Length: 414
Image (cartoon, rainbow, N blue to C red; front, side):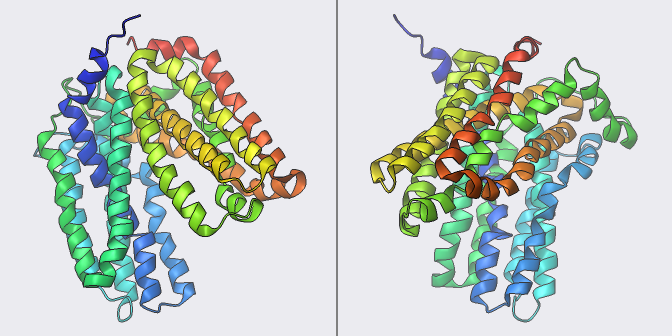
């Protein structure tokens, strides 16, 4: 049987994919600079642990960004259009903010550094809001899975640059110069604002702030099966998240791998496998469509938990570790591509900034609620049974995908 590869190759030559890569890079760069890399800077500078702990609150804007997303739906900047105008504005603010961080001293002015970092985190979360909206509005149905995958690829590369590479640079050129370099690297992502185009379909923004704030909820809740769709968003990645809550602890304490083994195989190879899985899943979505992709990739996510159960049975086995990590991250990347495409399909272009912000925050709710119970579950039933149980927690999400198949299929034809 001859397979026509043209639809797959056409996506890779799409200008929109280059824009997704650049914007993904721009989105991922600021996060380490206000979290892990900043924490390393504080630690090396001799800041006490209590202060370092308080600095973790800088990440708060990422979790509550839906509060100001209506503002970005309502107002249109005077340049580059409704979406790209906001992207460029936040990118300029991020470049300036990261430079200001470079000149703030953790030893002499920790409060000033904290305030500047909080502003950078706020602008970063704001950039995420509008980039998510732009991606939702500009990508046609057939490109959503691959667009999400390419975006994740750019995002992960940026996190390596602002994480691992920044830490290496800090020992060579110092922290101030490192942060200045990272600010200049933002120019790479900013180019995406210029080479991208506004969505072809012209959409009238909300006329008032009241409409911008309440319109997204009214619009979503007026749809058929809206509550079940929300429940699906909470449950789809639940099994994957539950198993992942204690993966590092399991590998070190449960089967006695060294931190170096875990860092190299689980973190290093796992990152590559996630990116490959997302790209592969995005390409497959062209052929499978949204419903079949959600179902098939969700099933693979569920089954991948059993590979860790097998590792718990076999004990310290490097071959089994590679298989488990590769399988789990490949399937997780595929599931993420389909899930992000699903969230994009749920958004109305008039309110896409607010709706995507709300739906993406809701998707983390299941992980936040069940993860604290993981330690108790392991102590009660052991590691192997824990991963078996986590497999079963994926079933409700898969059942909802099947139950809502008509609505999901309809999204692709609207």
